[in-house]
Figure 1 (cartoon, helix red, strand yellow):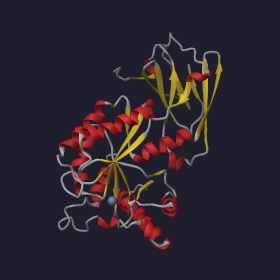
Figure 2: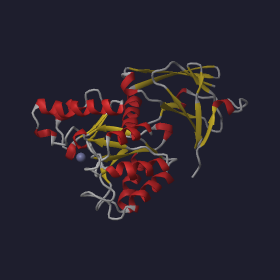
Figure 3: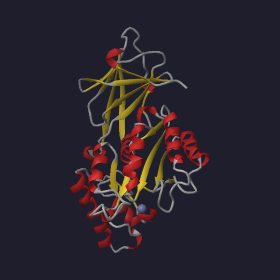
Length: 315
Ligand SMILES: [Zn+2]
């Protein structure tokens, strides 16, 4: 497998400018032109998410999404050792993990009154802001139960909700099953989200906890092909890639790419990847006066740009 070579555009030899045609340029479906995306998500604010999961993810350079219920966060950690605390949640957030809304107290949301439904979402949103300082912009339904009304309410001000997941843990942990999910995602260019509760305890914990870390190692070994990103980051990227058009024009050796999007910048703030068929050639690119980082892989260049910024020039 070819390794990804990272270089800034400043380091590129200028002697071999690419003669690009407008068809050579498109927005990549996933960050850095990866073939598929995997989000690792963890439900129910379990203590092990803080003590085991987050450190194991960080060791491999991954970040996870943790769906929390405010009502379950221990007021006194001495008497509840099964859930992580708000202070621990803040620490995880500061390390780049996504700490997000799984309702206030984990009811089946399809059986709530309109008032109760709104309260379950609002109360947890407010607790997350108060304790972590960052808004929850994704949602996960308790018991994965939702209907049209619940979904519409939960999606207000959010980039996505977990509606489909593959189970990691319990009887679903064998290597063959987990690797098949990833192989299928690579083959179909899909985004998949894993759902895990406990590692060593809980109703669907791993029979052998090393199956969890082995799976992380497997994902790491495919890092050139798979984007392991938080649910929020992948949801925002996918929406921005769909909601952004690029107009490509060429004058002499300079190709200009003008992005336009109607998406709300505060909610969908993300960098998109432009995929450029360069063949053997190297390119230099800039946007709003700043040189853009360019990655090369398989005769293509991948550069990161803002869909909310000005024209990208490539030479
Ligand atoms: Zn849950």
